[in-house]
Image (tube, rainbow, N blue to C red):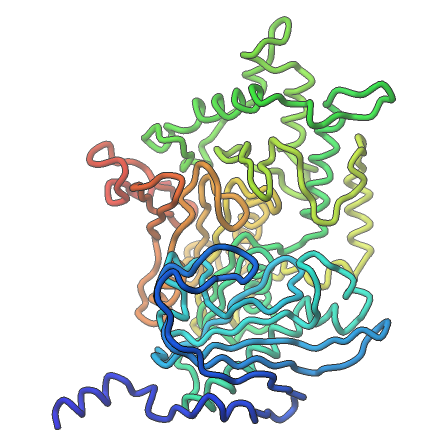
Length: 509
């Protein structure tokens, strides 16, 4: 009898669980819902499931048996006879931990990603831990940067903010029907577009989630694209020209020049955190100036021409007062899917690539006059309703992100702090982590990009444990760990102990 009682107490969330197939008939007042699939998926061993059907990365841990429900909200025919509807997928694990996790999207969305909950979760995705997870295409189908849906007003609104609000409500109802009880706690985690969606949840739907994690947020893409266009123009203006006077930006910096720049940057800033390790943690103290590399005579391998120096400084400074520049960081020369900022800038929706003069003020004025382009911006900072109900909000941003400046996210966080009672008060419910060397959401040759903010926000919400620091590891430095410290602090080496062990570092301003 005692063992039976203990078993019941250990698994209270399973007592009212309904068969997965029953969800094929799920309906909800106020929503036109079509369930296209409701099927039980067997447990899977570690390394046997793709995190993304289009990518070779495998889920590194075992997954439990779960019920997967796919469906569409508000199917309709829109502009040009194109079919629209808010697609969604929910995974409902047998070992449910009474928590709900909304997995944010990426790019312009357009497809339903596997509801895994892997973002900012280290190597242990939410589904594996027992979270019920939902994802959505936000109302349209198409390639990741296919913006044709913007021709349809409702599809635009769905992408910007409507779809995630409706899917959040729907997912909670599906969870409640399947398990016989509502989630005890709800979380949202996303990066890039998902980071923007996370901010939307805190700003437009402040009562929906207890904990939110926003990574490298695409919070105002009109301005970030403007900033990258400004950088591109600065590079083009400084680059050599062909016989017709057109710039050759690929010839602005040689491989040797880029190596020289990064080397000088590390020499100036690497050891400010107490350790020479190829990473810049004391970013606020970094005082690297490209002018230190300026040739005093003819160009050599050990210096840059005045034209190169001027172009570099202008590019990283950004259009002052319009969009912040980018920090000098160890990953600015990375070669990856999204090249580092010393390499050719890649802009999803690019302005004319040969432009050498760019009127940033006019471009900013055009943005200000175009209300449609700002519908998805997430710049609202007064979050009293979210914070008052106990909500916790974490931000993270790679310091080598070549798409969205981490200084823009920092600027938002500082403004939000000022408008919500000051930094000390806001740190009771929000933290920001700047990740050295990390590119856009992940990756980088000089970074530790694996960290578990899902556990951090969960523990803060449910246990009151404030995440002053979160331990990070990464493939770039096997065997190394460092604390990611909540802004404005950074990881500083104590001067004693194994320099590859996070416990020998302290968070300091």
